[in-house]
Length: 384
Image (cartoon, rainbow, N blue to C red; front, side, top):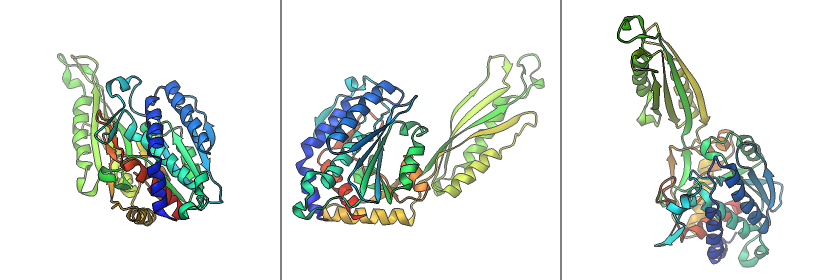
């Protein structure tokens, strides 16, 4: 595969790429607004079809409809994965206008991750369009490219996980077009993510007349929070944090119930199991109270396995041919790549736009880096 041809083609299509990104950003698509998400999905589906994609809508009742688009042929398949919903409400464009400034494109959802979608589309064009008939030494994609664009990644992927895992099992590799790490580095490891609720029940009593007859759920949950905090082990990458506590009904009543919400992150399946066992093994300090841990790991860890390292090595070699140094790293946040890696499919994450400010007011992408990112993805697909 002629990597420089891919680079030159993608660079020549920068105007198309920017127009596509801006069109998607203008169609605001907050997770919990199904009508808005579906409006964005309809536009995305039309644009996918316009570049040769065979598009299937995966309808959902309570969330936005997911989209599956297939390009090319071949018996083997590569899955390109991402989401087109955002964390921003409708109207955020008034506060964060779509702006090109100092080589950057600013706007809500542009980095996480509508630019990544457009990058993937340009990569598909570079490999499957009419321009690929042996021009410049390029050739058509050796694999079928399947894109799965979902609408609930930010809230756990409950309506898309089955489709994601089914497509992944049919694929030789999964390329996740989530935003890059700083400087364009890829994500070769992601922590698993989960949430637990610790429910403590005590005995109510009048706080002024006979407090000794009560067993305070607040006092007990305080003991348990100290135990939970001790589970955190930063040296091993295990994060355990109580993020919300609720308790009590009146100012003069010994509280009989308290709840602590716990955010958990772990770098490996073994570490995740260790945290789960520790939380479920908590016992009360005051025997008059009860302690129960509810919850689970929402996303398994994306571990830096040999298959992930091999995939990153290919991407790094292609980047060198394109004139770039491609680094790798890990992150505490999860993505749908966690699911595909956990079922044993080689997965490479963070292949999307270079920029900064995911979920922040300064969200932006680096304009000049966009075409070469598309060429990197196209080159990686062609060499798998």
